[in-house]
Length: 155
Image (cartoon, rainbow, N blue to C red; front, side):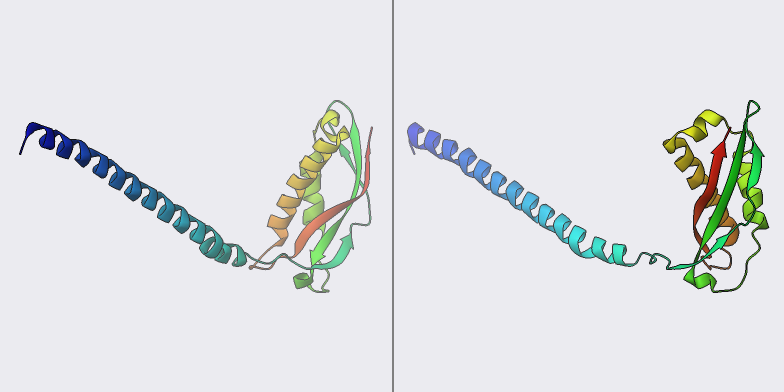
């Protein structure tokens, strides 16, 4: 074998191995992408379906009397609200004393500036709802799903 034939054989060997390497890398990337897509559409879809269904609205329990709550800096809040019960709660009457107590605790000492904006009111309402849901959802029964302000006056 001459020197030229040896040079040609060594020059062709790296080109073939680079092509083969590129094909292997491309195949791995495509198979990995296909596997990720299959997981996203098939397996992740099952997890989303396994979520607990949203509760169905039931009766609304109004708290008859509005409350006057002391805020910070000699301001006050006149608050009235109602509880949105779930269908699971049924028609039995519930004691609203704990909800009233949680509302008083939530708003006592709050700054009027926080409650005068829509964002502040909604944030405070969401906090109160979370506390009320935790208090009224017992024994794996979801009894309360929302609150409605019937009166909200600050001064």
